[in-house]
Image 1 (spheres, rainbow, N blue to C red):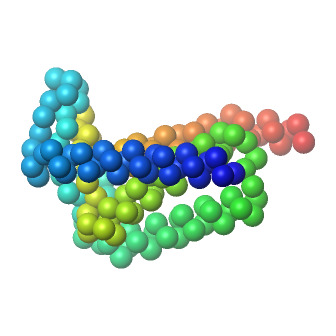
Image 2 (image 1 turned 90 degrees about the vertical axis):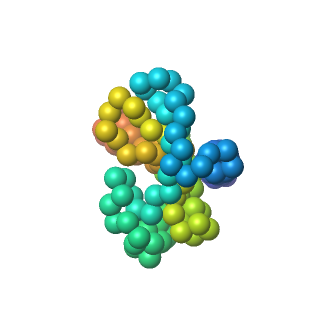
Amino acid sequence: MIVYYIFAILLIIVDQLTKYGIVQNFKLHEMREVIPGVLSLFYIQNQGAAWGIFEGRMIFFFLITVVVVGGMIYSVHKQGLQHKLVGISFSFILSGALGNFIDRMRLGYVVDMFKLDFINFPIFNVADMCLTVGVILMVIYIIFIEEDEKKIS
């Protein structure tokens, strides 16, 4: 179990270092192309969620994060991690939620920086990527593995 927490901590460190690097090297709303037509770095301060929804609702985000993270940790310790994929998914989701939570508590907004130039998509950060990967892994587990494990036991 501890290995999943260590992995989550490492992902949080990567997220926070990436955000620190952007803040130190970019002016607010400054953009630099990384892969022309595909990916740019674009420093914004997001006070909401994706596409700026729920902007300025820090108490809402605080409560949601505390409930989700608390529920996840409680569930993991009560039920355990049945499969390695669930543990990895847990690490990604936990790190993503806490990475953005740290920004909201410390700064009052989330530092975002990755902009996909080929599609109208919200600007995002490493924590957002962790959340997405974690949810995808959990869905894969639920759809393809969980039922097979129930049949075996």
